[in-house]
Amino acid sequence: MHLSIYEYLFLFFMIFLAGFVDSIAGGGGLISLPAYLFLGIPSHNALATNKLSSSIGSIFSTFRYAKERYVVFEIGIISAIFSFLGSFFGARLALLISDSYLKVIISVLIVFAGAFMLMNKRKKVISKIPKTSFKKKFFISSFIGFIIGMYDGFFGPGTGTFLIIMYTSFLSFDSISASATAKIVNLSSNISALIAFLINGKVLFHIGLPAAFFGILGNWIGSGIAIKKGDKIIKPIVLVILFLVVFKSLRELI
Image 1 (spheres, rainbow, N blue to C red):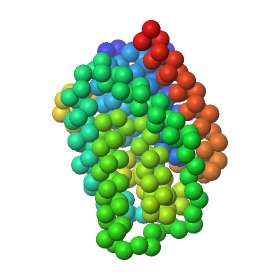
Image 2 (spheres, one colour; image 1 turned 90 degrees about the vertical axis):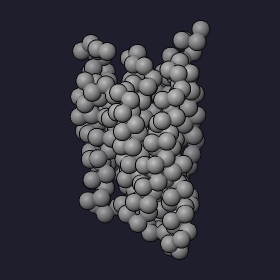
Image 3 (cartoon, rainbow, N blue to C red; image 1 turned 180 degrees about the vertical axis):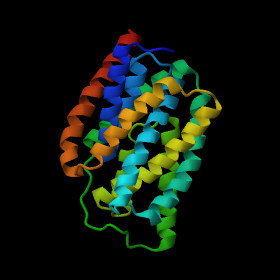
């Protein structure tokens, strides 16, 4: 599949925007995946290529958060291991569904994931390291990693946001530490799903690799911006994207 220069420019801007948003509060997939689908890329290829560009971009925001010591590795590594396993299973499940049905499922999930993201009010707490027993932390972090990882492998958008919500709700992370730790887990699940898609030859490298460069820029810039200020920018953007996705889905059904 080949894109025109204007389609590439559109995609590059959207991937930059997705990386910027995702590095702050998650949900970048609500922008990047619809962008791939909007250009007429088949659902399986869109999911696979989105994993390629988002994985590469996430490496840089993860590095920046880790460098500033916001990542809680004790929790992140456990979640990342189980996220890797869950994501591979989720991606394999997605590959079993026909492209036409998968497109409908993706459209519905995008709307619900976006609505959940917009309505959720994350609580602000001051604890960075959860003060619970290792056994409890292991159980919670592994459960979160596997379930969210499976969701990420099957679909993806909103994964980072859901991880942040889980960490702040069940392990009392502050928002910045939750976002930073979520990056490691999200990166692990992205790579796992990407491997599954690579095995099945679904990744469009001639589209995903150039797009990844702009994802890197977005992730690097976004990770340097405070989450509190970022939320004010993110929600209006997601609303616009959701409107476009719903409009496009309804137009195809009529």
